[in-house]
Length: 126
Image (cartoon, rainbow, N blue to C red; front, top):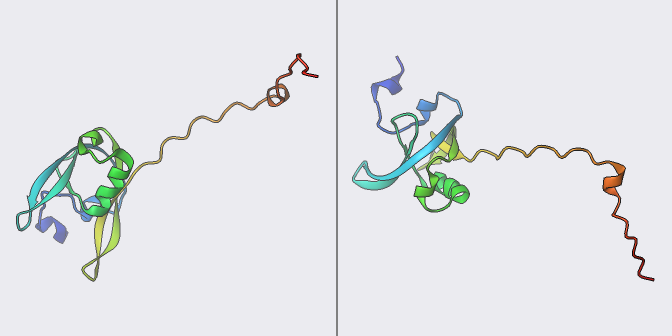
């Protein structure tokens, strides 16, 4: 038995990623009471029922790419991955967010010699 299964959580944990990177499409962000009635933003995805409690690091990563308005994040893609981070003096596993790189545009067709030369101007100014 995995001990992490003995304590189910409503929110995503690094263990849920099973040492994998996952692409996810964002759906919505809701403010929820976490722990001692601390309200925090929770990011939900189009697939899966667990939300990701957003910390400042992940919030800044997403807002840097998609803007400050969480309503505009809907339908946008992120990559979730596990990472070891410092938390109150201890090294713990956490979920980090990265923005996927945009697909590279197709390479332009090779140019011929004529396309590399400047156009000829028949009108000589002198």
